[in-house]
Image 1 (tube, rainbow, N blue to C red):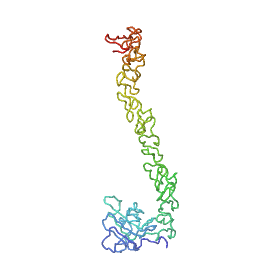
Image 2 (image 1 turned 90 degrees about the horizontal axis):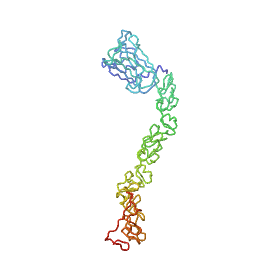
Image 3 (image 1 turned 120 degrees about the vertical axis):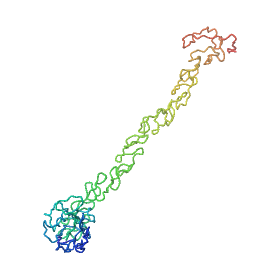
Image 4 (image 1 turned 180 degrees about the vertical axis):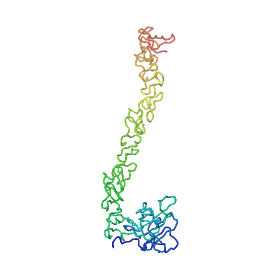
Length: 480
């Protein structure tokens, strides 16, 4: 049977939005699909008529299932009068729309036709609308909304007064052609194609082309190929249907479609590589520690400990005075082997307290210093020179043999057996040698009252030899 003779709406179920109410059998919605429209008047009982004084009017026809549609013909109420400017039903017909859809809400369907140009003089009756698509529901709709402006000649209220609505198409799905004998291409969405030329009205997921004969390409996939592939390895085309990457993900991505960025702490292909443990967060593509390193580390990948006598955040803090100028701990700056001379503390940044010097400030300044217990914190050199009878930088040595006194500037007398005199006061502890006497054994044949070889180094004058008191006698060179 030819396509033009297949009326898919004949005797199908219908629904009027606002029924007329009176004369139910004469105005019911089913009259629009009963195949009868020779009498187009109220009393003829072959037309559906909607209620009066409504702002919208809707007539829905249910084809029973989704079918391919070619065209729709509408036969409007005339009251069996001439279809000319005197016919008031033209005013009610103006501005109508026709929708094809798969659900009962017209806003989710396809608008096949919307009258925006007809006038009372031009609108035809027996109106045919070409609409090559597919759907289950056909809706005739008109409106006269309150507050809206409409062209001259439009009725004040909306009406749905169809004596017949014919929907022509194929009675079975998945076919097209004049006699509905040609199968639609296999990848057409829902098996439907254009009823005339067989072009698909939509493709199944992963295909494109007028007859859905091509797989998605150019880095696309999915329904209508409108989704973009993720970061597949080496920029490869993803699977055209679901977007999965056949050889895994490129750097910086993971997941089936390689659209998920690497989680924190991961980078590289498929996010398999671990960021450096010293990284605060690395670039998911390169692994570079773009957010910096943890304390004590440096480098592009935070792979190197702080060095160069630096430590801490970004290796920005200077080490203290560690032993032998060694590198401190790269994280907290502590000196692992102790402090160099003159410093103490975990980081060797504290100077020795007064009276101490040397490594870790463990040594005590000599009491024989010119200022007792005061010395250089690094070398231990005494401040103010040495006390009488001592010499060297740290004042830790008695005057050399034959010398005594302040700065060891005085010479000893002639002690018995050439012994060394007392380093402080110059007395001969075991007495004088033969021919000499006095506390310092400076009196005798070889001495005069003034010795010119003993000089006061401060005044650059001879130092007088003080004679023993009259009540002091010597016994074997000793004072008794």
